[in-house]
Length: 165
Length: 446
Image (tube, helix red, strand yellow):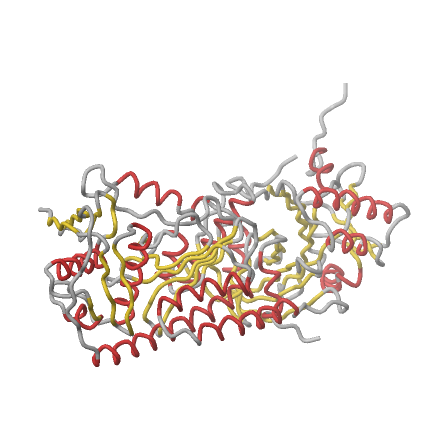
């Protein structure tokens, strides 16, 4: 019999699956003057122990967020499934920029493919599909962070509720 | 490339949800989706405030935000650096956003969730884009200009109010492919709008009324602001209003004295534009469509320009009518008619008039037709002038030229729809005939 984890990861298995699915991913950072920055991420990977999240950002489209993450390291990421509005937001304070690992590009491409399927189902076709597939092919970096807070963000009365393991 | 907010208005149609990033005073960033980014002018936008959430807390403490929108035509992302200025909880901007949000909420299945608490007004500090390859398209604007030119040229040639009203709606169909439209004028008390012309419906609905503040047309008129909704929302449907009107019935027992408002049962796009002359509201122009997102910012611009020209033309035609009236004479003539008399009843309490039990009209128009009938039957004459109606103490008309003319047009159109035997015909500016092709029996009800 396995003992229950005394310090379970903040990210539940369900939420880990959700953030790696066909969700739109928007990343916010901030600079030293508390001005926010914002960029879209194209795909996500969760570590096996669910204690680290890695998102992929095309460099040319994400300059200010990458600069802020390099300087400050604070990050907020909102994951939303377009067809249902289901959303969660995850925050971290230790975000770092790292190079893509082998296999990450495939993750990005697969993400692009399933995301396009989801938005196609609600009527978005070109130019959205081609823009998505262009972005996942651009020169990109990975941003990795440890989640230290997570929030329900599906529009409605439950929005803002803190998520626990 | 210098980006202008004006050129990016299609990004604010809500076709793709926007995203907002803010930052708490402790340095924690926050990112959330936005239901609505509303274009105010080239330096300001408003965001919908619906929940007391983290975004709200953050902007009240640290007013800087970044909003990302996506151009629905090119999928290019644009980012606006914003500074929060204030929140409006009533007035034109608030009502405009409330109506639009109702459409968005209904479309996204969020009717029970989305409720506008305020319109947060922001100054736009910067605009950036993730692609230098794509320029915002000007093609739509160019097309709208050409249509507008043709439309306004036609309106400028109209020498009579009734022609002007018809030409406006015909031009919308011809140059903007807008098939369902109505024109309404404000009543003498400034409380209701009454329909004087419509296109695209089984029944014209001429004479039907809307209270100021009721539905999209009433709110647009009351707030003196155009309101555009891109998705069907039950909150702004007139079907309910019509049903309520039906339920209340008239003052005459089972007899119906309300004219149903024309209109699509389920409009997916609606645009109401007030017709203003200076600060004075003259009426409203309303268009609708069974398709989602049918009307764009460019259509809204065009209809506002048309409504402004319409207001000017209405005023000018009113002045011309007055000049001509003062020179005209009334000529006594006798009505020659044969056949079974039409029984016409008049209820003084609300001015309603019935022809052989069928409701014709009430209020000011009812009082006017009753006077014309009495004068004609009493053998005095059948030719009248606007001027004498205006001066007639029993009618108690306010001294506003364009409104009387609008009432006469309404009366003329109701008669044309409701009776083969009674007609109002214009004989010149500010002059008209009442033509009776059957004898009439007038009964004044208690």
